[in-house]
Image (cartoon, rainbow, N blue to C red; front, side, top):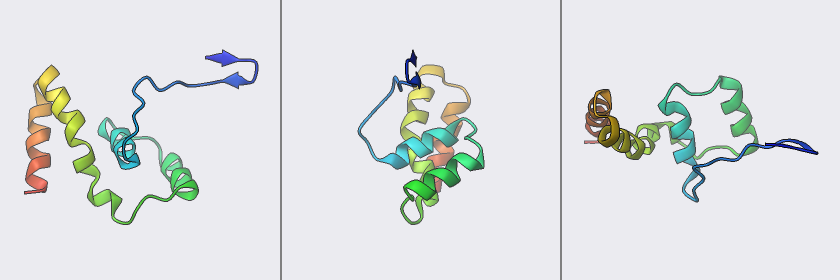
Length: 85
């Protein structure tokens, strides 16, 4: 949305969950460039070993996609579960 002060972005899927879930979502479909993650960590560093939990943060959205779209998402859910079993 454009305003007098400039552009604003509204997130239609805002939630009040753990921020690692948001980071997980950024990686789910390819991720952003490294500059984004470097800037994020400079301002608000992620907790130790966050990347070890990355696939776990993606499990819920993968399950939703598996239900809605089937296909390769089912395989990704199985792969994710195997990592934590």
